[in-house]
Length: 176
Image 1 (tube, rainbow, N blue to C red):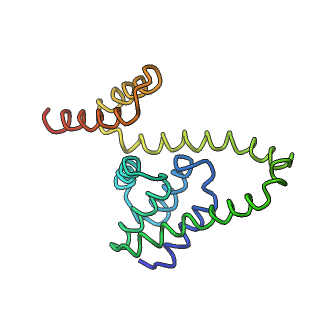
Image 2: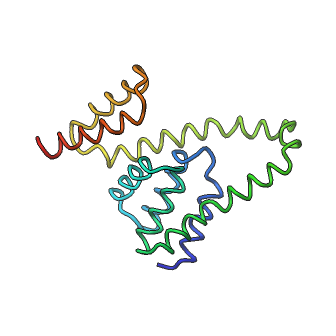
Image 3: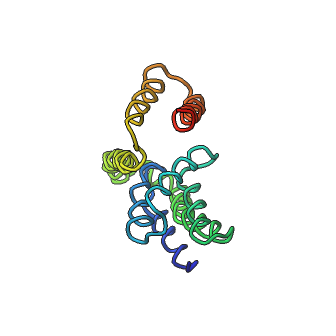
């Protein structure tokens, strides 16, 4: 694995990672799974799960995971992570420095309003892309409905849903 290519890929991803980790998943999937074949789709879905249960932003956790998986080294993990945070850090610095201009800019407000629907679309695309690989049997859609209901209707804490899903996974895929 060429470390410069790894850094460049994650620098590009970080440069357009607007909307948070879920919004960046389609781009990660396209660049890492489809275009470069650095991960299989199954490993990519596992990476999302691991990135969810570890502390920190999903984009950074994903970069660290992919960097390590593709190089087998901590250096690869560090390079991918550095790549994905470089552009956002620079952009935040620029925006912070010019915050008064951005706060009162009608153009900046319009750009942000224009980005919102795209971000929702990216998040829904992430759900679709992950579901195609993650749903492997008839239990999957039932469990998704259950977890959505627990989170949205009954307001169960997400940590409890994650713990429950692990227990359910053990029961369904090991015991049964």
